[in-house]
Image (cartoon, rainbow, N blue to C red):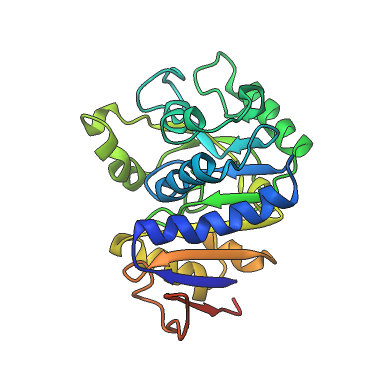
Length: 258
């Protein structure tokens, strides 16, 4: 696991962009696993700027998102489809047919989970972007989720709903359920880039990197993946016992054996 410490959301975006471009330029038909929330916004803005300036093309790139809320329309202002359109898809040359998100307002969620898992198995993810919840969740896999889980419907932890309430008018508006890639589904990605910002993520990040591998902190399973890059600010790394010691182009980084 490589851990990179940066100083701002702009630096996070630039460092994460390097990882994305390495994949996209190597394979014009690569599959990108994408995340929502505040963590990847810097990356998406960097991708847009690069596309506009350097004409990096996503015309043949396929994308698969981690999750979607249950019970709201795809057109809802807080759906993850809307988030991705506003922060990325509307600003690059991606083919809408190559965009995949779960549908959370269908009549049969079990069938939707099965359909989405097939999409994942037919489109092996080259690079998966992740955030991390303050309770250690990845995607919407809350503490206690089996490491062998595949795409499923999850009841959102109250702490997760409170963390996401800032995007809604009131906590009561935050959905209580979501469809999410399972942990096993995520681990099939060839490379994983996890982005973390803020003091509220520090305990989860410390456990993820240096704690025991346990379903108490779902992100800790990333210690078992052979190709993980963690990009985080100083606050998110503040509870690590090992500190970054190498400075390259203004960015601190270190290797972790976890």
